[in-house]
Amino acid sequence: MSRWLVLCSGVLLAACGGGGGVDVPNPLTDPEDGPPAGNPDGACEIPAEAGLADVSSPRTVVGDGTPASCTGEAVIAAVAAGGVITFDCGPDPVVITLARPAKIFNDTGPEIVIDGGGLVTLSGGGTTRILYMNTCDPDQVWTTSTCDNQDHPRLTVQNLTFVDGNSTAESEYDGGGAIWARGGRLKLVNTRFFGNVCASTGPDVGGAGVRVFDQYEDLPVYVVNSTFGGAEGFGNTCSNGGGVSSIGVSWSIYNSLFSHNHAIGMGGNPPQDGQPGGGSGGAIYNDGNTMTLSLCGVAITDNEVVQHGSAIFFVSNDHSGDVRIDRSVITRNLGGSWYTQYPQISAHDDTPIVVTDSTIE
Image 1 (tube, rainbow, N blue to C red):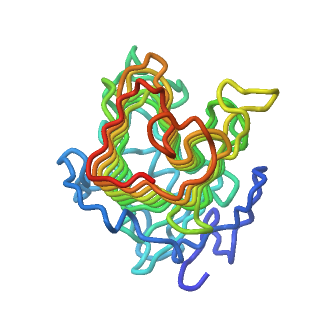
Image 2 (tube, helix red, strand yellow):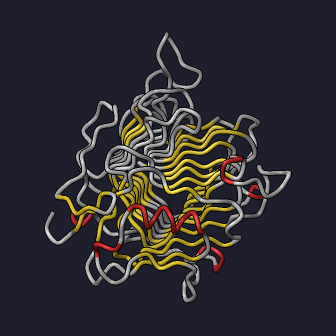
């Protein structure tokens, strides 16, 4: 593991055993060998609201300056307390492995920021989802009467790496191998996702890296300067949406990289020919009503699917919304069918897809 330290429930180990039921290779991932956050060729200007959050006054600092003080239990407690969370685990990179998901409580914001300072990796150890937020989960405290459309918590995850998250054991809130989020707002800045998995079959389950439902006022999830996979052996795998997946959610993605991710379900949605369903959206899976997908400075390469959308699956049930692709590259994504307008992108033939200064081949 070179100079990385792996912490499993506070005990220093050489490795934390995996498992999880997905029939694809998923060795515990050494993030030091992974690519950096973001598309190195992306040069799009970032809106102010999509940038880094202020962490100058943290509510909780995980650790006391030593790697051993940065335990999975300390992370879980810090996330439960909410507010701004930073880390002090020493000068070297550290991997902190969680034994169960860190869960956000909806009354601990309204602003919640988790900032790893570019040195922290959170791992699911191949056995658990890593981070969970759900405004409609009563166990996490209901704070309004309209949990599916409330403006808080506003969660920013920045300067962090997520590895070996595994949500295959989840039944009620499935998908989201690393992060599952519903309600409020979600923003990802300078994040990396390596080796995360979720259910291997199912017509609508997805998001090996991130699964999202219900954003306030249908505002977009921001993904900025982030990497999903990025190199062979570091990709993320799920039935659908090897990188990200959502229902009725808009996305604005800037200067980010999606590569070597896999959608391995079979049969599509609804499932065909007795198959279990899934297999769409190698990098991005968007389904639902009234949503948009905006890409600027994004590279989507070398992803793979069984059914549809080797790069992007975008199906608006009410035929509203659009896809906008600017200064981006979509190439060498493999598999699938139903490419009505552009290769590697599956969408209704009446979905507006506006492409400027981009390569799709």
